[in-house]
Image 1 (tube, one colour):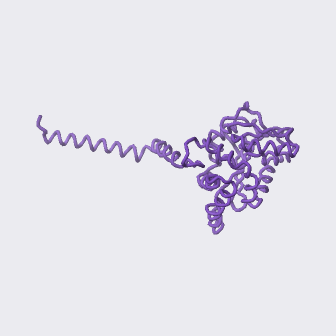
Image 2: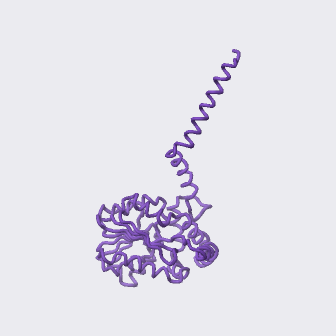
Image 3: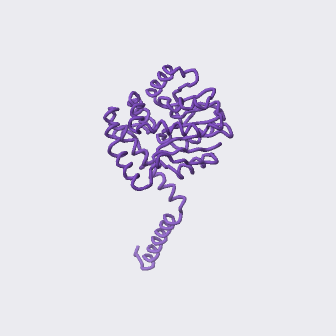
Length: 284
């Protein structure tokens, strides 16, 4: 069959029309574009401790904290020059007027934040963590301090809490949400277990923005802290993961938007120490 000029014109027009539709989808179909790029971005930006190993972020985080559990408390205070203790105290004071009686400490680790919460005189503080190594250190600490009758440390997934709805007067987290595999899922489950009118208080690292403190902080966080942390902990990934995970974390207003998206109201962000960390507050 001979190819006529009319056939060529028709074929060309068909191709032009197909290309035009494709361009229209790419440029104007913003929701689709966001969904596609969002999936790519999410995959590319997932920060894990052990890049050369298999396993989900959740599995790797649990393994990392198991590895460093014996040195965790010392390194926390040493690398922050003890400022982390003051940050926890200030975060707990955000709940002073609420008088919570049942408190849940998410990603409790060795229980320092749970211990600080006793200043509120609750009936009970329940701590949950995925690292058995950290919990073992924490349980020994509670026994040594005579606090194991008021603080219970449980093994559990912070993104799939094994508690009924509306159980706790307050949920607290210190330096834990940054390690969630699915941030929105974890925050939504916190919202589920808080009673109506209850609060969430989250203490997390953030990124300083003012010159020259931002530059000094970034130098310390990227070059100094990992070398000291990795040397003392004997884990070559843990304290390299820390600054990487902080850089990836959506701090400030971005984090407040996520809190509101999962159902929290009256959200606030209170930067600490020139923005090194921040306290986030929300009400159910």
